[in-house]
Image 1 (cartoon, helix red, strand yellow):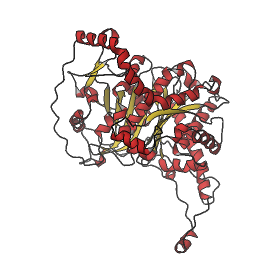
Image 2 (cartoon, one colour):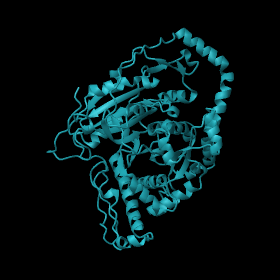
Image 3 (tube, helix red, strand yellow):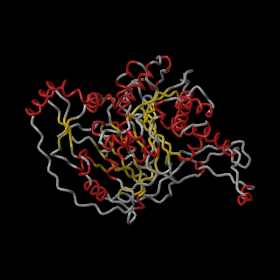
Image 4 (cartoon, helix red, strand yellow):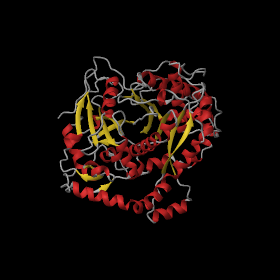
Length: 555
């Protein structure tokens, strides 16, 4: 039995009928890589059961202290039922992308049962009308409450279920498990009384550790606190949210964002993502005649080092001290008052380049290698930080107009029972005053941007996603001529002949179909390049009626 920290308990107490602290991770799989070409639901259920012993998250539930004298405790669920937590559903016909987004938004918005372990997994099939997905694809949505996630140690569900090979070893028989008996009400009441009396003594050491961990974020927030409320213009996203959620996504090639970043010297992929999101906000609000004259701002979280020299960090690790990166955030103006994508990117780079937070940010390669900060766990930690910000400063004044979280993921494919994962994204929590959140995930050469909001603030999420794609196309069209106009590198004498006939490399965004689903983007005004044309939806698209029907997950 272990007790929740005050940090985690605050999310339980902050849950309302309109906003809860759920974070949902969304995955889509190609089951053609499974032996035999199909994956049965019973096989998946047995796979999950074989890994229940890998984390206490699966089988523990909350035990509250009578009269709320102390924070709740985690106890083992004596009535744990795996089939309650793992559910099998299918989309109604025709099973298109719009229906999929509506379904996962509804699942995400529903609160979890606080009397059971705080997680659910939904296996979703019936993706019959997705052109950009292989036949027989299915989705997996994992929903977890913030209080049940421990990002510092990577105890999150999806990381425990995946393998790096399509042929993982046969699952071991489930380990025997017997739930420890939970203490009764009298015992919990005594614990609460004792904890209340001893709280001043117990508080000293945790407060010292917390101050050390949260110092980067505190200084960053203090720096932003000097900004006046007038510098953060109020928009529809700073309103009260409803209980209904909307979710959309657009999928791109990571190589294209690496190309976009070349528009501004020193810019990073993170900067390019911020610029594209800023362009989408500009287009959407301008179409609604709601675009402010001042630039909109976003909270952009970063994992940062504490500034210790490498030798000191090695000594801390040797003495088993806490040397994990801390979470901090930066308030970035998105340049929504700038129409030109090149100027907008340079405007954003001028802010991030001068930030000490960004200077100490963990490198992309290092972040992808830190097991304790796998993408899903980092997203959860980020949303925790943003939730605290919204509960505090954000309710007194507009801290920002939205949040944008960019988390690099694994560069190699992951597999679930042999089924290859082709898509990974997240549905982020929102709250009053912060009604728009972008989850930016990268996986296996792809970069996915997924906005989450509520139905009243964004009644047309597909239009918002269209603005996101158009902003990306505009920036990429500017970057391609810039790349083609660069002088070639000096070639050796043996390569001189080849250099006389240079070839124009086709951008990853010009490949239609497949997992990218980005469509064709040309370079306007470039000799020998195609002119840009309208691109079809970057989300999986509706297919023709004569397409072969995919195989389902049979029970």
